[in-house]
Image 1 (cartoon, protein in one colour):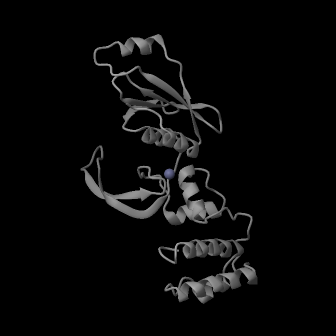
Image 2 (cartoon, helix red, strand yellow; image 1 turned 60 degrees about the vertical axis):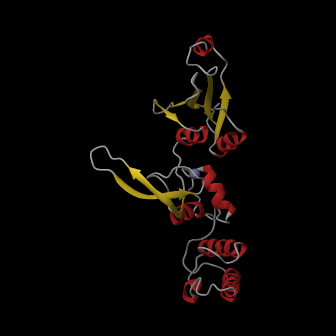
Image 3 (tube, helix red, strand yellow; image 1 turned 30 degrees about the vertical axis):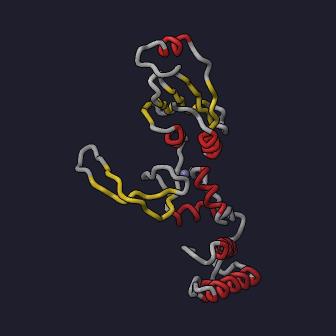
Length: 232
Ligand SMILES: [Zn+2]
């Protein structure tokens, strides 16, 4: 039977949503009496934590289907899981692609033929869509303090990898401090000794802005934590 799990609740929190169980109505009890019914219907209101406004509605029907309504757009549909429903309801969420792919997906276009494309994996596991950020674009948005449309779950994953808001730091080329540049060089030397030469060129280090240097240090430290494996 469909229900809201602890994992669903924690995803809701990540997405800035709050789930509020609605009281059972006479209509629910009547629907549960139907011969096809397998349960008493259950309705949940989905509110935005930020604005406190209702943004969606979830309904487990008497035949145990999940019916989802996105209130702002006035559209409804069926979803397989509560997690997919929450991701669909969340207002302007842009996910971050990891850069990795898993198999292919079929794209059905309304006035054109179908085609297959590799299925992109996002940081939070949501279905990828056209609004996603690439890994590089997402990092740049975060570093520059503009992650307003970014999915909270994806953002948390990026921040756990050491990408942070550096918008207070200068963007001027060469504005990095000698201490920052020394630190970058030390990390690069360590990377080279661990099988990762040429991570950042010597010329590029001299031209780093304060903001770029800080982001580079974070990325190198994160790479070090991963045993110098994977992309910088
Ligand atoms: Zn996401």
